[in-house]
Image (cartoon, rainbow, N blue to C red; front, side, top):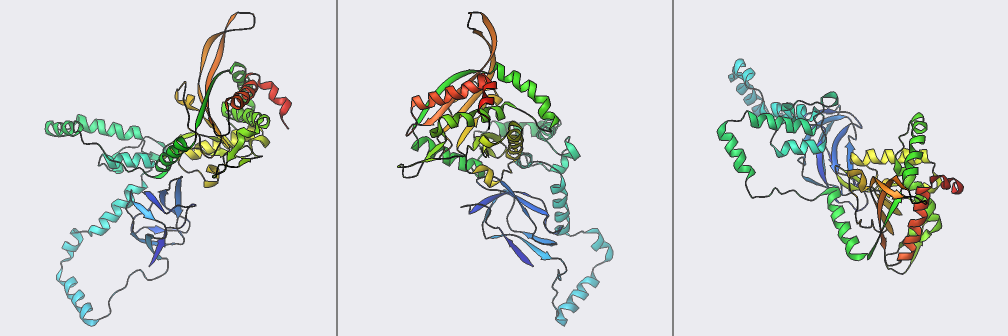
Length: 421
């Protein structure tokens, strides 16, 4: 029997939370088969089997913390003897007499508790559901096997759990309804440990807000022409298998503006006495994932086409929402975008994603009346933005010039053609 030790799964990571076991004790496993999902302070990581065999023990309970280089699970290598019986004559004779004294009917009528538990465990883990749904099920002391899944391949969704709870409350006896009401009215809060991505977000936001003097700058951008351009390009992008949102256009315009104001793509060193100017523009985008706020970045935006940027945006968004972003996609960002408008926000004062120099929060687009050059009122698509800059080396004039350049590319998007390589 071999113990699988939790390996190093990221720089500086010493522990992680066991989110979901994909197997139970007694299960047969194949080489490279997914065994467990663990949450680090950066992302959700899937650990696979090193070789074929049988799982004999799960050392860490789901929801608990596993330490790096500590046993995570034990397994019997395929082909090795999976049992070790004593060879003493007295032991053998005693076992024979005990077995003979039992009636066959009694042995058949009383199944092994361990076997039943193992079978139930395998069944529950085979029900497809996300970690968030599994957590909700555990909080209400339910079993996934009790809930009818309406998703693909019987996947249990959050709505299925809530529907199941509603049905259970409607059929509850008066006494159980009183118990539920009493529990709901209790003033005792539910305690949930701050772990994984949320824990590191809390630490970094406190550090950024307390060590970086933030300078905020707001503006309105008329994106009427940009929306029209996107509508014309959408079918062309779809023909190439890509979904074109406004984000690739925001990023491309930002990379062009960085070329005019390179200090916006610089970073101050830890000692605070050197500025490092980066030639590549790696633009991060804040994603509201189920694991917490994640900011993956698109590398070398200045070199990519709109289709290539759209492909990266789609890949990173899907990965972040599932909590499975690669470490490389989270590192090396030089400037960031937070599209709070996608959730309905109009204004926001973002916190810089250190050690970057700046971040912009994009509000929702509204159709508002505006005067044209002849004083005639027109219906225009107006988007609000708020910049946050590191005021240690970025002043008001710098961020205003940079924003005006970026705004110019977005309001008259055809001018970007003059600067594309």
